[in-house]
Length: 541
Image (tube, helix red, strand yellow):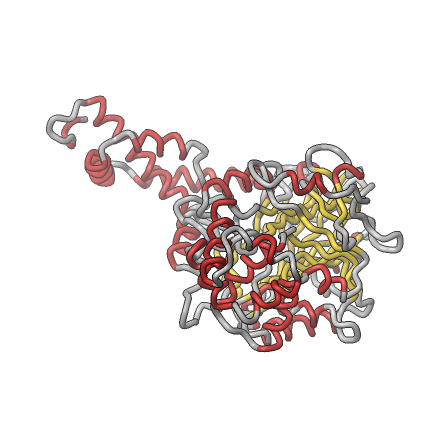
């Protein structure tokens, strides 16, 4: 064994280096088949204890001596066995393509939902639409739902973000949705964050005469300071005047702007505050928990700590908005199955927040520590987003660099997925109903604390995510390609890649996704890039 060892290296160290090299080779080949070893972290830890030159020597030696044909054969055998196991499972809990002979054998199904989701090709921005429809026990309806347009007949429809830069991209998509929705009903609108290219389409989506009527609007809770911080990210660039004015109004008074669209309720998600700022929530008076209207498809707000939403877990702002923590929305609540929409937001770090405030105070010659009091005044906020936008932009750059701050993440997937089965119009066989989706806005996944809290919040959902939206259009500033936060099957970047100031998605991220054996999809401004996922989900009685 020591023929390839480095002079002065003991046999035990050389054997460990070769063992790690063998695993590295096995793992690289397995990923080309879409396979993954569960002990990756163990060997990475062992590798970290070896001198780099020793591992490199061992890897080169084992590439020359190891029989890769056996590895390929083993991977092909594993793929075949997995497919066979999935095919042999009861269709009750498998995810199957619609062409599979067992796909529609659902004698035990008591609750059936059709779910379509669309990532529209709006360019640099975001516009995701999801629909749910109760399909009952009619198997002809099950089949037809996979090929028919879900928007007109949906019992429940939600939107995650609505904007683009330039605005023309999202305008066309909004017109399409409105034209296909004769009831004009929009059950939920989720706003991930306050960047212009994620919100500028809202006035058109919710236009009084030409848009949809929204029931519930959900967005992250940002106080006066955090909203000015959010504005700083976009303030360095100028958009079209119509989008600029809406953006400024939204930053100055987001609830007032949203109330102008006459929703039944506005729900604010209090950001994660494990170590700072937690008292704000409990200082607010109790309020009624969010819930569906009596005439609409039923849904409830559920406290994810295990308690049903009560007055103590919901608070009310003076302007009437509801503030909640640790909540998920259960659509179709009260039935055996249903759908979960679970949001999460992380708070801006206090250190960065303080640095931003100080930078603005210095730039505008304000007294030290006065920023917080000044921005409580609406007229002062208006001046900051108009007259002093350059100072705000420079302060953001100084305090945050290229980071994007508070974003609302959203998980969308079946309730009780371990009991469910699914049929996809197009898709691969899986032994479980893994059909969940995750939208990430502009969250900063390069920050390890953010990643840890995200994974903890979604510890019950991560294994069910098949489609993952990369944050900030696939930017390298928001995602570390060497540290994947989730093991999704399809990774999506909503981006317009040709731009003078950025390159989205980042090539190194695309390469890393494909190296893992996962699929990558770019949704740009081209109509052909539209991402549409269609499925029927079943639950037993």
